Image 1 (cartoon, helix red, strand yellow):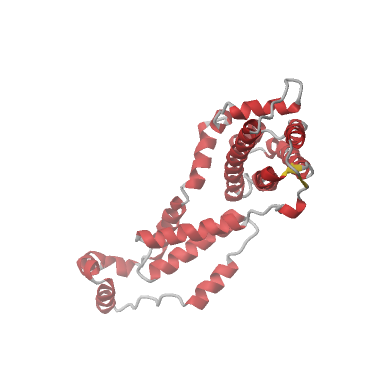
Image 2 (image 1 turned 60 degrees about the vertical axis):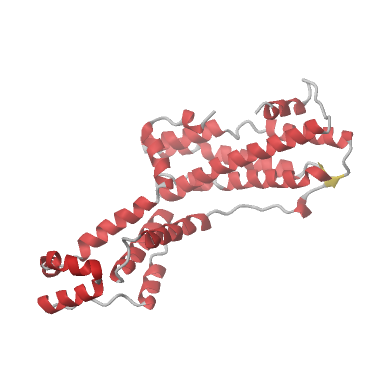
Length: 297
């Protein structure tokens, strides 16, 4: 089932889509800088200079300066730009990225850049890097695993134990996650986000439970990835809780959660296939019977 089934309205779907279209922030910042930086006297000569700018914008600028008697400000030095970027730092990711985009685009425009695709791609990449840098989670290593010999008994015990951990935390729900964020976004009510703390704690408990499960050697790489996926999902819930006060951080957290959920599904499917390949079958009374759902997908 697609997560879109859980979104309360088209309004929220548009908000989520806006995160992927981060290039729109560049266009918005460019609009602001263009309207604020165009002086009236320079604007009067723009039409005459357009043809020359197409061939050589620097020569066109010199012509404008000579005709108007006004000298265009020099492009800001790197030290100035760096100082502005430092000042733009904020605990609010939306504010920080917005300020940084505006500063970088203003600097690019002052150098005659900004409209070209490579420059805009670079600006979007810089903004994306800031968003990704905000993500953090506990990362398990192979040293955290309890690895066992691979036998039919150990594989069966493993299959039952993993499903027992997952089944023990029904609060870890994608449906409730999307519903909470979507409802809060539509109603602008922080109360709708209270459920996220409970859901995030459940994902954290799953990660902690998985890392305690003894793992047959051949399944240890997949199991380690699975535990880290659930840990990373849990780490994203504090970000999602900020969707009203820091929309970029909140939606980035939701986007990471969706990606991790898909990855965890693929890992679980791979484990189910491996258990089936090894001839491990579970009765309907065993927790491991739930692996059949992943084999069917």
